[in-house]
Each structure stands twice: as C-alpha cells, then as structure tokens.
Image 1 (cartoon, rainbow, N blue to C red):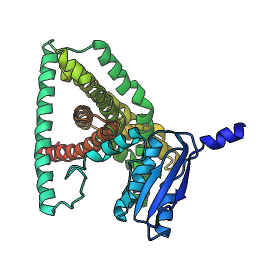
Image 2: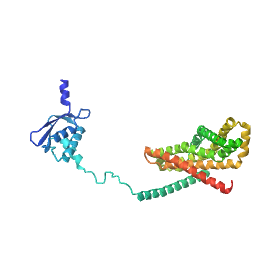
Image 3: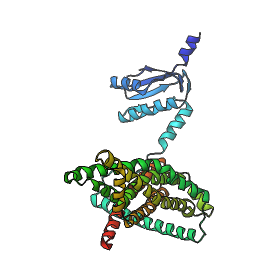
Length: 383
C-alpha cells in the first residue's frame, strides 16, 4: 500500500498523440521540492523526434500538487516551443500556474539593461585616468590639510580624541614592532658587512667594514628599513581598521555625533607612529651595527672593541640626526598613507583588502621618493 502511494506521489510525464499534429503531455504526481522531477529535455526530445507535431497541450487530471519546479519546467518548454514555432496551449494547466506564467512573461527585458562589454578607446581611457589622478591629488592635499589642522588643534589642547587610544597605538607601533625590526635590521647589517668584507679583503682593509656598516645603517638604511617594515605592518593595519569602520558606517556615525574622524581616529595614529619611528630607527641602527659586528668578529677576525671603536670614529652626530630626520618623515608618511586609504575605502569587504594593499604600496613608493629628495637636499647643503 505504501509503495502504491509513493508511486502516485512521484512526478511524471506521459505523452499522447490523439491527433496527427498535436502532442498531449500528461502531468502526474506531485511536482514539489524534494521529489524526483522530470526535466524539459524529455519533452524536447519527443518533439524533435516527431517532426509532424505542430502544437503542445497539457492534461493535469492526475496532477496531485505543484510548486515552482513545475513553473520552471513549463517555462523551459515554452521557450523551446517558441523557438521551434510550435503552438503552446496553456488552457488546461492549473489556474494558479497560468497566472504565474503570465506574470513571468508580462514584463519584457528593459532595453539596455543587459551589460554589454565594449572596449574603451585608448585615449578615452587615458583621459579618464588623468581626470582620476587629478581628483586623487586633490583628495590627498585636502587630507593633508585636515591632518595639519588636527595637529594644530592638538598643540593648542582643543583636539578631541581618547588618550587611551594614543597609548594603545604607541604600544602597537613601538614595543610590539621590536621583534620584526630586530630581525630585519640585523640581517641588513650582516648583508652589508658580508658584501663589504668580500671587496675590502682584496685591499687588506677589513677594518673599514665597521665604517661601511655604521654610516650606512645610521644615516639611511636603518630609517629606510624601519619605514618599510612599519608600512607593511602598521600602515596596513591602520588602513584595514579604518576601512572596516567605513564599511560598518562607524565613521558616518562619528560625523553624525559631531565628532571629527580626523581628530578622533587619524590624529592619535599619526602621533603614535611619528613619535615611535625615531626610537625604532635608533634601535634598528644598533641592531644593524650588531649584525656587522658578528661578521667582523667571526669572518674577519676583528676584535669586538676594535670594531666598536672604529664605528664610533666613523659615525658622526650629523649622521645620527639625518637618520632621525629620515625616520620622522617616514613615520608621518606611513601614518598618513594608511589612514588616507582607510578613509577612502569603499563599502565592501573587497574594498578593505584593496585599501590595505594600496596603503602599503603608497607608503613604500613615497618613502623611496622622500629618501631620494632628502639625500639630494643633504648633498646640496653639504651635510
């Protein structure tokens, strides 16, 4: 008995040809989700195998129930009949199915709604990029101006931000960055010492490895490597944090409450990184000199005290101040680039990833440009 009821419940399609040119489709069982349903291909194959068929009609006396699966079947079959110019008769279908089919075909596709991919002309694309670049420059200048105003308000004691946030960002961009700064700076010192030792050994001037490593690390390399590390670590973090806040509309909420996002979000991050970068630069210089000392002692058989004395004589206070100036500039650059890209972030998850990537690229490129400009300036001033 249960088997018979199951067979009656299963959806099925039977065919009949009472006339020479008319195909009757008998719909049986329940056409509902979870059932083993027929597909329109069965009927299509039947029509294609009988070229004399000119019309299709339905018999639903044995139809026990239906839902959207039946409508999908009927729409697919109707599309095929229209293409093959076969008459499609719906009068014997359930009244509800007829109404839904009419509703589905009542609104035609709007002209131009379908996306058409057209190749944009080269000059048009170049013009669009140029316009976008000019607009981006305007946004950057506006952001820098707002940041400068926020710093002025901070110096006059009128800036609105939480002091606890400042201490949190100081810790994140300071002590928590020491492990990666230690590793990279020591490796850079090792590499500089090793490359210099190979060349200087030819002339018997191994002791000048201390001069090479000391001046290079203190004057430029310590600051540059620290800036790049912080761009990939802290700058990207700033962009991701602010980008996520932009997606969650938290920045819009701050504006609604009358709180300046520039002072509340950007200012503490910029102050923290600007203050910690010189300290991290000094630490990177020490680690780089330590890396050079390892090569000098183990590879060149130089006494540690001799190496350190040679480094002290080679590195002047001017080199130290120039390195600290580099690092302070890089700190501002990384903080501004990270916060700028975060504030410019779109309203989707993918936009956060793009903002993070853009922040790192912008920071590194700007660091290299700033290094070149400061180096040229120092050369012109003779320092």
